[in-house]
Amino acid sequence: MSRRPRASLGRVLDDLGATLLDVVREGPDAEREVGGLVIHDPLDEAAYPPHALVLGVGLAAPDDVVALLRRMGEHGATGLVVREPVPAAAAVLHAADASGVALLSLSRGATWAQLAALLRTVLAVGDVGVDDAESLGGLPSGDLFAVANAVAALLDAPVTIEDRSSRVLAFSVRQDEADDSRVETVLGRRVPERYARMLTERGVFRDLYRSPDPVRVDPLPIGYAGLTMPRVAIAVRAGDEVLGSIWAAMDAPLDDRRIASLRDAAKLTALHLLRVRAGSDVRRRLRTDLLSTALEGGPGARGALERLGLGSQAVVVLAVTARPDDAERSVAGDVVEANERERLSDAFALHLQSAHPASAAALIGDVAYGLLPSGPDGEERAERIARAFVEKVGRRTAAVAAVGPVAPSAGGVARSREVVDRVLRVLRVADPRDTDGPRVARFADVQAASLVLELRDVVAARGDTIAGPLARLVDYDAEHGAGLVSTLRAWLDAFGDVTAAAAAEFVHPNTFRYRLRRVAQVGGIDLDDPEARFGVMLQLRVLAPGDGSGC
Image (cartoon, rainbow, N blue to C red):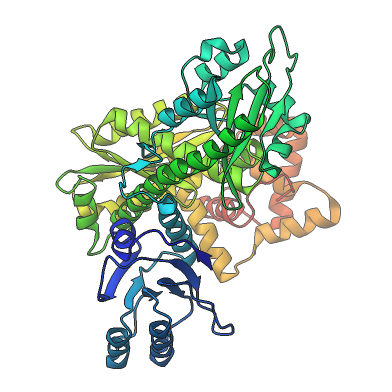
């Protein structure tokens, strides 16, 4: 439970109603305050804050909904959210009316965790007790540069506001009064890696995020310049969550007045960061839900495309992601990995916007999907745009991109997405050591590989195993170590060219010919029969894909 009397029910529905919540039964007052968030537990009697919004997790039976509505009415709760479909029994609707509690439904496909996180963000925005929704602490809501300048004036020192990853979110004037490292930080919009590493090694970030008080950082002699001016930093928090930090470059002593100023500045900055995050989270969620609806097809696809501004246009579906091994190699921890995916998605969205202002992109799972309005050369242009993006992100994130066929209408978007997913699967399972392998592809480029992967799915689902001549060769190799399977594979891959196949196996051609005769004898296979050759080739591709194990 969280006690945060902030937003009204109407505000919650305005922010989240288009994506997560639907109204089943309106309460008597849409502007009624939401005083806190409670997660219903049937095994525990919850303590309700005034005007609570209750999440009825696992609540489905009409009698249970009626009982909870009555109890909430006694406690003066504002609203109850249950999973769609909501029991439509007359008793449920009557209980909602009698209790004065608004009855809401959580949309299909959304999770309770998503709803709780977004609700806490929306509710936290109202922490500051001002009537003007566009002002926080006398400064424009969400204007972090105005906040940085205000803090700089209080401390008489140049200031930066940074996130948990040491990216600069905003900075004040007078940065030229600081040292070279501050100038480098501002120009690069993040703390240089060598400084961040030294701060980590000295335990500065550990002390900063553990303490509610400002932390002083003495000069650090790194390289030709280093931090020649002391820093004072304080963490910016919302409850137990660290949102970022404020850094001031100052020689002045850290007296009581400046400590108090920094504490007040951290509280004010937290409110502005929450307002920024609330807006971006809701917009991101809305864009993701609309794009998901369009990609899934069905009756809501046309409406979703219209809300994205793409209702009357032919579009091409694109998708971008990082190969799993690349993501694991470039990040440390699930939180950072999620941030990397979001950054890749944001960069992809910006890239598409520069190509066409009406495009739309969003992160769904671990794949960034995009819809690009199509012209006469739709697929070819989309491929050029995707290739330019993959080259732009470079080696830092080894991304792969798939391009689908043109979808002339809403009905074709889901089909284009299916094709994109098939292409993306081929690109993701490719050997990452193959630097010459495709990074961007259309279905025509990878159709054969896609069919092989799908055949593997079929045989795996049915439990099929190797049989016939290939099974005899596998058994013989297991007993004698003769390498007959690899001999057969090399010969088939070389289209029967013994010299090329022998070179691939690093043996003399005469030795290879002898092994090939043993393949025919042991396996009982007529290598002159095209049907027999196709049969063992298909088994090698589908049931015994080459993995260096001899099969």
